[in-house]
Image (cartoon, rainbow, N blue to C red):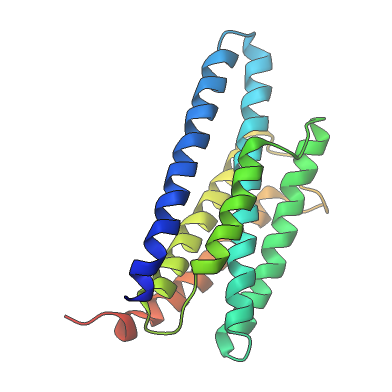
Length: 196
């Protein structure tokens, strides 16, 4: 049995867990819709930040696994740098929640950590394996999601500075560079992974 087929039960379990979290989030959002409008907007921003914090936790777990698995390769250095950048970006999201007086703990964050721990066992792979290509593609999509967060923050508060004094436009530019780095690695795997 190939590695891809062996990983399918874990991927399915993560999908079911994701659907459960989405159902809880939907029910909560419907309940909150009955409150006052200003409170709803702040609650929505807090929920959105929790979404991204959970996503950051998952990405950090995945990149840490890639860093360890490829430590003696040129890609390992890229993953190590990306890991540090993702940790710093997660701190920005944590600080934004702190500024709102919101907890950094949430069901979504718990799910993100759980998913990251499970995925750590099945992500990655060697050059030429579909699992590594898929992992990089998922990371690239996640980084685009983070870029969306930084763009939303720019629209919400154009003059708001991120923790550490950086602008959200600068954070967005970093996300673009991160995406380009990941996508370059991903595209470099195409000839080794696929044949037509």
